[in-house]
Length: 358
Image (cartoon, rainbow, N blue to C red):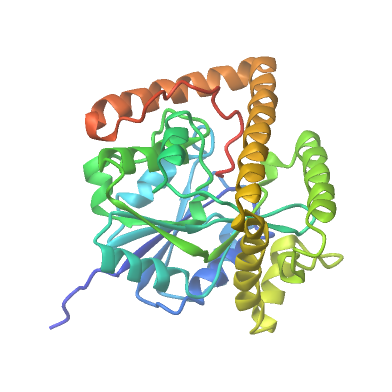
């Protein structure tokens, strides 16, 4: 007699009209070193050749949800798939992101060994110029926890895994939100567990690319400025591995996938380059003078950053409305989570108008 056994992982991959890059996200899921999973691909009102792309993968672990367009980024459709998920753990992958082959293995082992409900790995953002920038964000640090109350987050969806029981314990994706649902989702889980139910993998296991809807003229201008600063401020510090090739006629994802799969050294070199970059930045603080300089520089940079983000927030009624609603939601979460998870002065700074999370 065949006994049905639930898979270890349920992978939720939401997509909307990105048939050009979706194949590479799917391949990065199917090429995991852990093969005990179901892959739930959630079509959010797709009008291109997405269904054909999914059908080209003849793998019994793949399930296709061809759903009508839901409001906003389609959080309601994610919930449709999640209510059918059978895995012990839930992992997320965006249609324009890529996993390293050991992503599920590493996060699954971390969840197993710690007993945590929520795990995420270090994020690696890929700019439109192909340059990789690590996210130095760790929710085990109190000041980073405080930022989450203000809607600040650098946890990209493709880096997260959590227990399926979190859905019944803390809730599903908020279907009333048009954007920033990831911040609310992560916040619901970690605040509900008083920030004691999470674990963090410092090594990167995924690449997060700029979403089409974010790729605006303003974003491109800011990216060019950031790239200029990186190239000149960190000359001699940034290893070549932190710059992905972008070949003519290919999407960033296609070029990245071909690079990662053709060179067995690519992923280890990216991980080593992240450590090298961090060590180079922190080496000056080995002396008291270096520590003072670092602290002074961080204070000045924080003031400039707060002023810039505050100006952006004040200039956009849409942003103010979005983050007012987000703040109302996170405030209710803070109240519900009880005094153990209270962070002092959650209103000490203006909300971050543009979360890095997708």
